[in-house]
Image (cartoon, rainbow, N blue to C red; front, side, top):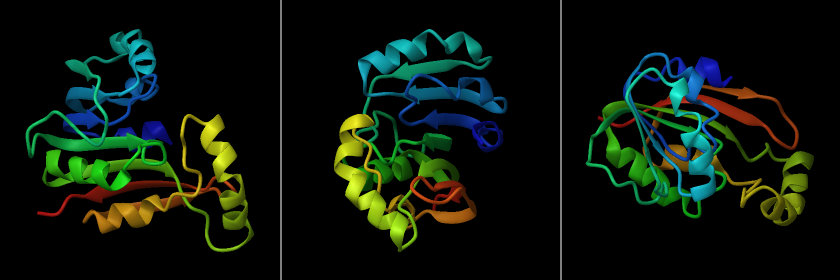
Length: 176
């Protein structure tokens, strides 16, 4: 899933919340790559993998809610399994929108809130324990609704899996 999604990342690319750098081998069409990660330990682990990238790469320790970049700086922004863990997803999406060029691409891989029914009930019941076990992840956060409320236009969005951890993979366009 990561490989297929990140093959769409082109031009000057920003990955928000790069974690341990697991996406690095899949940036084949980027011109430049900028990574952000607020956790110093995760950033340290990413630094060990930077040689996997064949384009100029920069790692910046910064949260998604306060990106230290100019407006309209990136053609593509990537977020994989990030919106569930940031403290303020609305602020993070606002920052992503700010740094994207008009019409730029937002590439998303997120687990999201289950459809109404037994799985959503299960998510809500497990959410407090899950948050403690999974680095602050909000299991039942309505990420898709937040993305669209932030003004991003869905281009291609697909659902993978069901149950407790449904995933959404998508390409969104920033408003012009």
